[in-house]
Image (cartoon, rainbow, N blue to C red; front, side, top):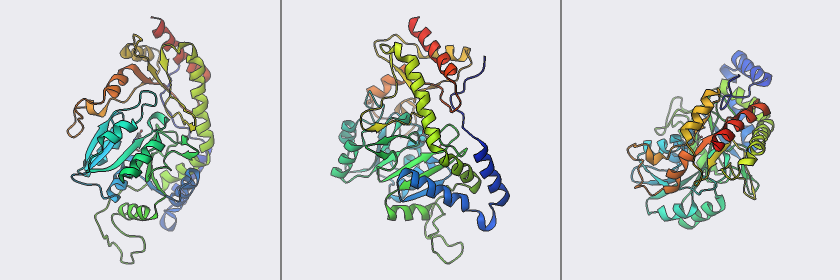
Length: 371
Ligand SMILES: *Cc1c(COP(=O)(O)O)cnc(C)c1O
């Protein structure tokens, strides 16, 4: 029986031809060509004027928060259900991550909990669109406006998701993306910073170049201590091919989710999948099954059953406040986050997964539910 991976990039002849061209010709005067092109194409896809390619989403977030002036003594609100990458830059800047609870249906930030967590030290709200599901951006933006606090989007998992007609990542003060090998669009490792705000863009551009301002005529002259989170031209070449194929990549993610929805339909009394609320489109980065509270469900038994059948599955994110890391505690006031992770798993989704593969995964879930 063949192995079913939980993700796998879709790399075809276009990626290979651009990467080969970059490796052959993309040096010297041409060493930024694919980077510039990838940034332009990605910005156009997203509907934003400014984009900066980075070595990771973590780096994009680190620079964006730094450009907003976030530092020691400041607080940044984010969801307790998050990858550590969203919290780490806050800690590195000397600020305090404030972890709040999620909504039970979207598994994203609960706007009421966000508002309750605001203090005079709050300097930003980070909205992570988890697994492609959308945060309630209207409510979060309204809270942000009322309190004068920028809302930032971690859209690493939300390429292909949109809210009220705008693409995820294009709604907040800035957005960040990841092109890690597991993501819908990949450059191996990589990320993107996007914004509508020209001034913020210029600040991040300078930060991303070790503090050297664009237009500075003196060679090797930094004006500030910056960062080095650049994407290479080789990675950007692969990114250009991926962004040209983005509609196809997203459509396939959505088609895979539909296969799961159909195959798991009979188990509606046992579990829920990623929601797609009116006014939103879900890019379905990770099809995720959350078993209902009244259902007797042993996550480890399911993971073992998958493993025995050569199927990779992923655990739902642990609440960050559960990791026991310094600076990431929250007094246990995120009961929904702490209740969900052990009732949930991510299901395999990659571009050339077959309907038969999806049905094999669904059959194991069905068997576990019947047990
Ligand atoms: C993947 C991911 C990141 C990190 O991306 P890197 O490119 O690995 O830095 C950040 N946030 C979320 C929500 C992610 O899923």
